Image (cartoon, rainbow, N blue to C red):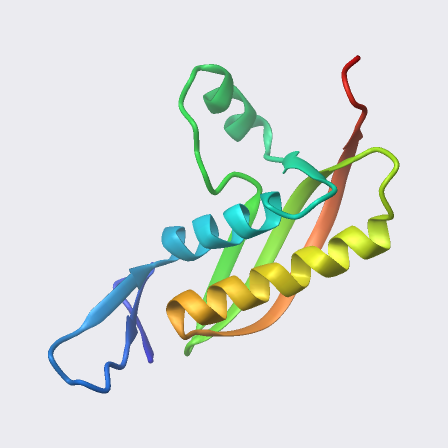
Length: 126
């Protein structure tokens, strides 16, 4: 596996029928979807630019996710808003497990680290 063209990564294919390349944006989307499907996660948290883009109606599925891939090893940083009344320790551990499993199963890349920043806690609307 080699880094290719800045943000596109090649995966060795055993069938040798051709190249398979994955953009880091795809890895980020996989991570975001796996994280938001975890019970206790309210939403992804983004920076100011991402928040403005989402308010303008343009959804960026990978907001709040930073992915670094070096020589086939992935490091993921997530910014999350959690639901009130859930254990932060339990929820973040589940997120780390789900994200690692999703990325490794879908891409074949090895996940080294999943760093989580809890950006906020959201209360349920009555």
